[in-house]
Image (cartoon, rainbow, N blue to C red; front, side):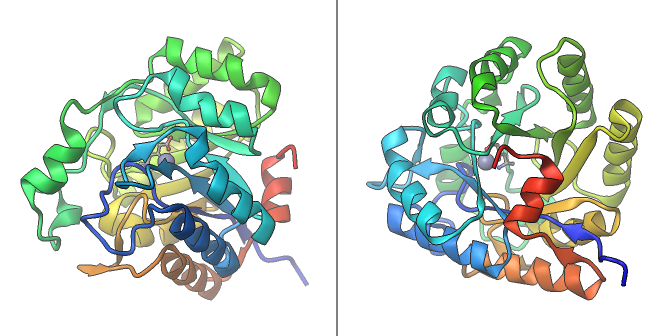
Length: 304
Ligand code: KMH
Ligand code: ZN
């Protein structure tokens, strides 16, 4: 019998955008990040995209000491692929942002492919159903919201991390970022095959709809041919619907409370694992199988 197509589920556990005031489910203590990551892996996530937070107040942290407690527990309890963020948060330098990856040398890390305004916005469609408090939720997150990833920053991250043989999750928030990635490959910073995360629905980047997804995919096909694998991360309410579409187009999917706090329109998710279970069910109902961590390692060519 023919093997069913495999879909890799990444779960992004906590991120740096959402604040603990926005949902009780958002994990920010060491224990909660570890517990939710393990539960997400058990539910079918083969890759865990991880940020750390200050355990006193939940603020984003790139202090390696804030990674150690949960990384150890995750590695002990699962064989999921660990993917450490190099996005950190908007105010940090690239040197600070790559430090945890340098120290822990995970199988994967993110690599953001361009500078941009970066925000979620109370008027953005995906927050229609969310009672938004401007002072609490928007100003706190988005004041001074330039997400800096110059070519020099990308070069510094790529060359510093090269000895670690970490596989990059190239986060492309708009079509232009695909061209940035192509340029970086042409000058030898990244080697094929690459793994691209189409990031859709962040205010400052491309909107989250099917036309834009098709455009991103066609552009990537044109630029990279067979030399790439891809996944989609759609922020907010588009998360699950566009993930389903992407899986049917041959892509992989990323869910998690980093990118959306919701499980359905207007209903907060109660955990990361709940989102993983939902997308897994949908993907399987539509004829795909979810990749195990070792299958994900093989598909993406990880160092293992
Ligand atoms: N939360 C995503 C939209 C990173 O960690 O490098 C962006 C992200 C960046 O995941
Ligand atoms: Zn992230």
